[in-house]
Length: 153
Image 1: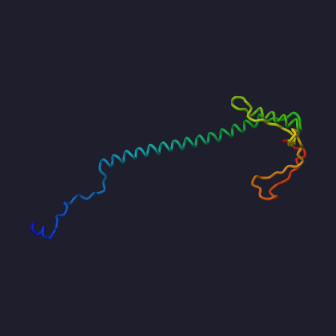
Image 2 (image 1 turned 60 degrees about the vertical axis):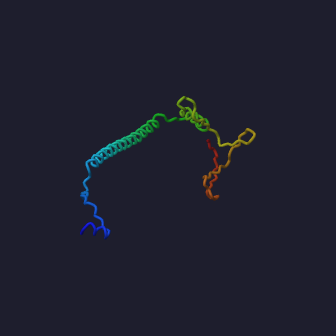
Image 3 (image 1 turned 120 degrees about the horizontal axis):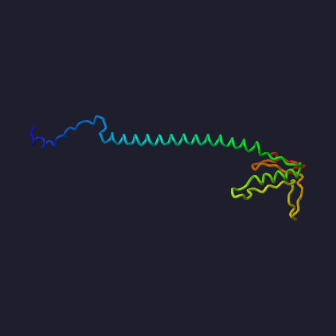
């Protein structure tokens, strides 16, 4: 057909053919992939080292705390020289001396006394009965009345 025929029919020529992409990456794509691969490998190795160090620190902390707990309970048991309220006071003083802040000041104040309450006139009243009740008690059956006859708190 002649060009005049093409123009009268309204046809246009097709685009010239291009080679089909065969799926192989270009050299720049391969270089970029290799750079990312090495970065990921470095990150994975660093994470593995951190995980191993974390597990080692946990094992060390657990074994060390059990060693120190065993050493503190064996040689430092306190036995009061007297029984009753005086022995409880001696025990309270020993506990109070043991717990100190790093600067040496007292951390806790420990007091041993009979089971008493203040009466409002700066006096004390012995407690004959004590109610033990959990904070989430719903019924009277959740509570228990205890008679602390000769208790020291």
